[in-house]
Image (cartoon, rainbow, N blue to C red; front, side, top):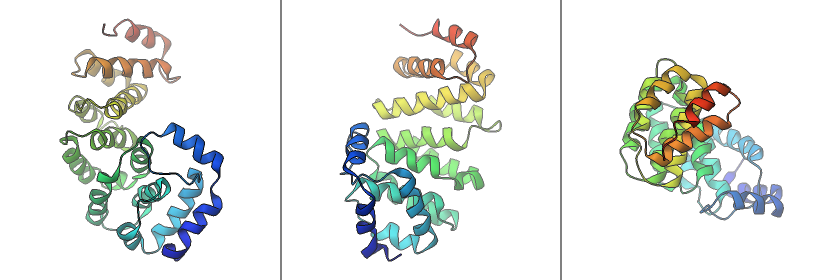
Length: 229
């Protein structure tokens, strides 16, 4: 596909006003939406990743929300040296201004499974940034790819360091903690007994745990009683 001439017409042919209105209502602060469904964007991203993905990432505009989602997906589908992928990710992350682009990047960044330690080290640089979406990326990417026995304690320790007081950071941390509890209740329970989370984030973590069908009812009752005032 000659994406520089064909991409925008193709996206517009798939777009619907209903989808644009529905999705933009769920995604505050996003770029203007054409209204293309995410499964269709995944298909296009796979095509782009097999072609000149570097050229796409270097020259694609950020005019539309869909362009940003495509960039997020392409970073996950592209096959290349890990250092090259991370260099493009470094260029992409400052563009993230909404939860959907953030989470699409995180959940699709499957190269983390192949090079976990390198991606971990790269992520920790973002954990140090006192900014909302870099810290959300850390929380959601760790949740998506590092909730494994050999990483669980390290992941939970990182959650204590993500202290930026922004809604999407706090929600990302709460989501990660709740998911960690569903997978590793013993380790996550021990962490919650001595955590350094902000009160809001701690209580939201418990709320999300209680909403999960994967958490035992007796555990829900125990942690509900331990919410902070």
